[in-house]
Length: 203
Length: 203
DNA sequence: TGTCATTTGTGACTTTAGTCACATACAGTG
DNA sequence: CACTGTATGTGACTAAAGTCACAAATGACA
Image (tube, rainbow over all chains, first blue to last red):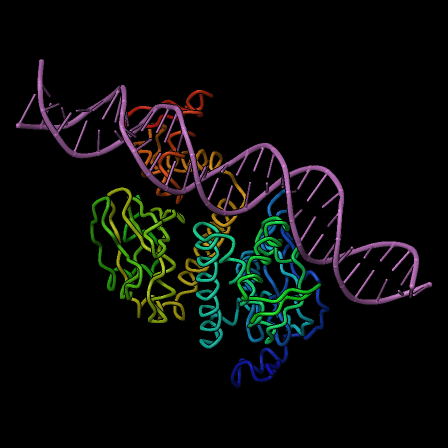
């Protein structure tokens, strides 16, 4: 497991030990909301966080997951520029999160190359994930997006039995529940999945 | 105008002066292609570059423009990680571009806080622009996306007379030319624009 | 001025997904 | 077991946009 003490090496870990604070959050907790000012950068130790973009009408779409050992890059960016968040972050699985004050996160850039590399690597990953979302929404049909989402959730939860409702899937995809239900039924007929209440099993 | 010598202050400018190289590119030149390895980071001095995402079937969609004084953050990220580009960058208006070797761009992070800030600020901007693209593609209808694109181009070129074909607009939006033509006709009827061959005028 | 490549206009049709309105099924609780 | 809230299934319809197949207009230039 990722802990506060084995994320990085020596001096940086020392710094984190002195400045960071670990907190627990239950599934469903909103870690970061649209337009919120950011005072600390979260690093996920266990559990997972989902990051979504919401529009004015409350429509939402899943952007990516933050997994153990990763941070929320949007917090970092907006944080060091004293700006507001453009996204919303919700705990998906109960999570332990290491909170680091923004000032420290900014200062460490100059002190610890390892920290800088951590930030940049994460940046690149998020950037590529966002590009994937653009690609999916712009060019892929709902059925393949849905199947991909199911595989993503299966991999995140390390199980083929995904506990989720059609409505939740529809929300993640930014579409209508009926469309999801119909496609799932189709996928069941095609022997790709098995359906039951609150649960979808990948075959 | 932005030049090689007034982008940053003192020492950093000195460094850029010694390491950077200015080159000219004509409109249409491909600066960066999908899967290309990256050896230098471009900073636009004049003109503009458009960054697009293309999928396997050659479908493409406009992500954002790089304007004078800005750089291509994807190059930077992929560059310092010795990775390949996931996007394509094409010169939109004839451009003068300052090329900086990747190693330098990486090293300066430790030497010049101003450089680091430049990179992070740019990152944040691109991230937010990408979020806007996701939002537009996921939730907005083609007519408003088209109108927004026209305004974006008008502002970029500093003119209300946009020299562009319907096909080019369709490509930027990742959609079909016929759809664009029909919507433009509608917008002309609504007195929002005036149409002529290769040219659209905002009213 | 006539020719020709390119651009634009348009009808007809299909596909995909969003909307509305219910019916039905399920699981947990009293 | 009956009740009840939630989840799922489904038909019918609408809307948006993609596709196909041409027609018409435009402007460059021979």
